[in-house]
Length: 325
Image (cartoon, rainbow, N blue to C red):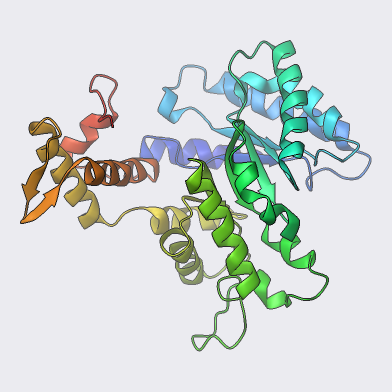
């Protein structure tokens, strides 16, 4: 956990913005019987990080989240009381694992809000949820519609194991065979369907879909290929990493190409000069629909640490207003 926070600070200084979140784990990270001590250690780390970066600009401030135990676990309420009660102002969100229904989100929000109120946090603490079973995926649209849910992540390995052996172990990984002889997480029909349901649910309700981990962390090319599929074929806009070596390949895969960034910057500049009326650019019509798309390209470029053209870089300064719908 300490190394992850140090790496986040290092890369924030390098890119000029915080380009990835750190999620400290209380669900799988705590030994059985040591849940309370582990939660207190996590709170101490969050608060230390906040003190160390007290005068850092907002876009470089650390983004730290914590994954607590599931709502039906005996340690859930204790986690929330300790973590939210002790570090609510230092958290960007709280991760709730093994959410099955919208009711689970209601329960989590109730306890989180009570603890946050006691801690002095004024704005609601965003909730990110993990869907890890077939039943949870069935309720993806209802869960995504919940106003407190900011992002939904897909829990691949628990999803596969919840099928009682009906899905092969190969579906938890990425097939390195160029001929694709085994069904992996991108080709197995049930896993593909689950990923697409979650992504579609998030986009339908304006939430952020977060792709699952890739465990093959010693093969950067394989990881980049998987991340590119997650972003371009499945519609995910974030992705989990489980090893520091995965972060840069994921950022690269999710970032727009340099030529796409340049095109977006030029179209946005031309649109702004026309007060966002329809324009002709390189023989093609562009209007507010395409302006929204190319604005999102620039946002993704900024969030993934890309170098922006001067005309686009101005959009991300405090003194220049951003385009509106």
